[in-house]
Length: 622
Image (cartoon, rainbow, N blue to C red):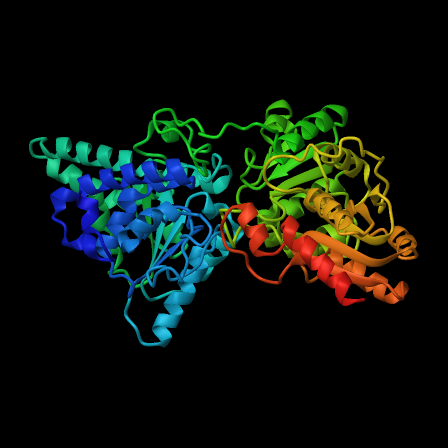
């Protein structure tokens, strides 16, 4: 295999040109075979094979800096830099990441995972290079979906005054995770017509030049008018009017053409955009036909594209989807907002049933929050469904535009807690902390699927900022018999005894119930409480419980600093003398990728670890 000849960066340059199409084919086969077993981001990587090869042929790595926006399309880059033999560990515990990681290779010059960051980072590299007197090239590869993000547009604005070479490769596949929307998408859709324009121009010129006597004169007049015609026909001039050189569009699956354009781009003494047209999922029909489904996929059967592991239980996102549809039917003031993730966040059904009340703002979380604030001011009840790690990108807007004005915006915080294989950039382990410090914010977390439904109904009637945070994956169907009516700031007692009280929030209640059984077997009586509200905490209940319980244990799937447990500890220390508090949470760290169970064990949040920590805590106090 030609692919076996690639052992390290720049080995691709040793191959003869005629072998490059075969290498691209082998890379696609390798990606499909590997990801069908490990899961991962398939469609985006299949679409970027030739683009990545052209970049590696045109630049010197790691001296030249190649920055991948988001980075989920960097698998071919990893293969070409000597990591092919590690792909069986892709996204697995202690294996290679599905995103660029500086600790993996010097060719990964910047860690990415969230959208719209590459141009900003690239500008930083450019100015660092110039200050150091270097002459290496800096290339930022950004998708058209990421161009809807405010950070990317801010960086583009900052790139206008640059008088040194900086190459921005716009990988245009007409999608992010879902179909792109908005003005940037319309602009790029129009720019794609440039190829047709060029073909038309060349054909007309050739025919007119053959007209006797007058042909060449007419062609000369056309060439003089070319610039004006181009301004009228090609929206690409918008980039050039901003002061950024524009090259393209070029076929993103034609390696030779891209290499020629990159060679030209390297000569430009300013910021230059190279517009590359690719097809998401190219080379694998199921991914071409369903690129959103194969954006991030679980292991699948290659011949059909069907997941290997059938979905047995409803996921929390499914429950949210059903509840949102029902809320929309009952209340015409309920509106839904997403930041380019209608499928991932469970809003597709709502969008189909109530299209006039559904808003996809693109990859722009900050805008989504302030937009929702405007809707709330206008008398509506907006629900912003968003992943926990993405919501933190809108911290300022939540504080100033929602909480400060006490607006009834509902934050449906999906993927809260550990998310597993996507790793550090996607773990939702900070939301209880960053939302909890905001005045006027209320935070809830359900113990099971029924409680998620009840909490969303409660939130729909609540007059103020409120967040409902729920985990990734299958919805818990335990504790069905425990369904007390939700009251503001009130917890729910599951089992009541003495000695030790465990206050568990959200997804940690099933673990806490098992720990309680272990403690009983060890000779301790134990009360179990479903906290329900991370903010405000149930101060009255805690005060009552500390009268008959010497030990208070809090368990949460969030970092320790600023979390639920810290709020409980502060209250107990100030109001409940003689009570000892043990806060069990995630250490203040970034958590690598791996299965959720592996990560819980590593973080000492699994059943056995929690049990042992509590027993040690109690016994040390004797």
